[in-house]
Length: 509
Image 1 (cartoon, one colour):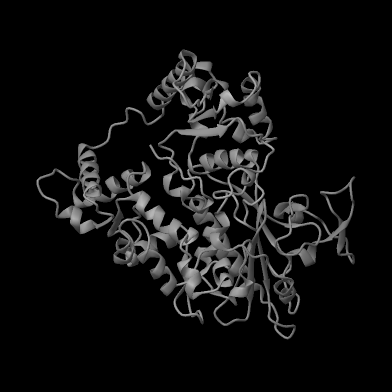
Image 2 (cartoon, rainbow, N blue to C red):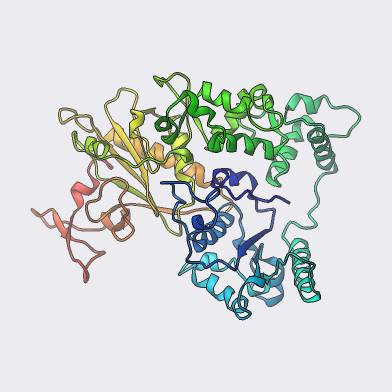
C-alpha cells in the first residue's frame, strides 16, 4: 500500500505510483465544504503562492485525483453494468472521513454532492459507484459497534475489489517472484539503486535468464515495486527504493533549509532553475542517508529527466544548471509576448484535448523539448510557456498550455527574417511526435484534435470557446476574390468572419 504525500511538491511524481494494476482509495474530509479553498485549512501543504494549486477548492482536488487515476490507469475496460460488477470492478473506493463532525443527514447527501462537482464529465463519473462509497468516523476515543461496522464494510469492499480486478489470479513466472524477493531483500538491506549486472551476479536463486530479465523488471515496475526503464541510458540501473527516489525530488522542490537560496536568489529558484552546486548542497543535507543521493546522482538524474521532472539546460551562463518546470511560478511577461510581434509569425496551432488535458503534461513536454531545440533566453520560460529556437536561430518556437490545449506558435526575431514553411512544418511534426510519445505513456489513451482558434488569441490565452478543428477549416470553401468567410462555429451567437489563408499559412505546403 502506498500513501501519497499530500504536499503539492509530490504531485509531479505521482506518475511513478499510479498503475492499472492497482485499486485506489480516495479519502475526503466530509467536514470541509467542497467549495472551500484548501489553503485556508492547510497552509503548509496547500499554499504554493502563484502556483496552479494556490486557489484550489476541495472539489478541485477531488476532480484532480480522479483525473490522475483515469489518466494512468486503464479503468474504462474494467467497468461493467451489473450491480454485482459495480461492487467488484470499480477500482476507486471513495471514503468520506470525519462523518462524526457533521450533521447526521449530510453524509447521506455527500455522494450526490461529489457527483455534481464533476459537472458534465461523464468519464469521471463512471469511476464512481454508490456501492463503493463509505462514510467513516474518526473519534478520538474507541470506536463504537456502529463505527466498527462501517470500517468492516469498507474492509470487505477492499477484499472484493482486489479479488475481482482483471489481473487477479493471473499467472506469472516463478522466476519473476524470485526476482522480486531478491530486490525486496536488497531494499531491506538499505540499497537504493542497483545495477543490472548485480542481479545477474546473484547466486543460489533461480532468476530469469538474461533474455527474460527485462520483462520481469518491467512487470515489477508496473506494479510499483521498482522504477525501471529499458532505455539505452537507464537499462543498466534499477531504482529499488521508490520512496527514496521520490523524496530526492521532494527535497529539491521544498528545500526546507533554503540551501539553494543561500547561494542563489529567489528569482532564480522561482523560475524553476537550480544550479548543480545548489542541487549538491540540498542532497548533501537531505534525509537520513543524504550522501546516497550524491553517490547515485549520475544514475538518478536520467530517471528524473525521463519522467519529465527536470532536465539540464545546455550552455546556461550560470554554469551547469537544471530546469524544473513544476517549480516555475512566474507569469509570461508582456515583453516576452511582445517579442512575438517583432518579426513574422504564424497563427497559433492548437493541440486541443477532447476530454481533458492531464496535469503535468506540459512539464513533461517542455523537458522533452530541450532534447530537440535550444532554449531561448530563460526569461521566456514561465509556469505555462516555454520558448525555444532551431539550430541556426532562424525560427523561434513558443509552446504554451492552457486548460484544454497545448499551443504552438513559430516566429522570427525581426521583420527582415522570413518564415519558411518547411521549417514551420518540421517544428509542428516534431512537437506532435513529442505529444504522441507522452500520451502513449498513459494507460488510458488521451486523445486530442489539431486545429486553430477562430478569433485572434495571444499565446497562453484560453481557446475553449473558439477552437476550430483542422478538418473544419480545410472544409471551408473560399469565394473568388474574397478571403474572409463566416465562422462555422459562431453562426447565431457572436457571428464573425475568419481568414482561412492567414490561419493556415506556413503550417501546410
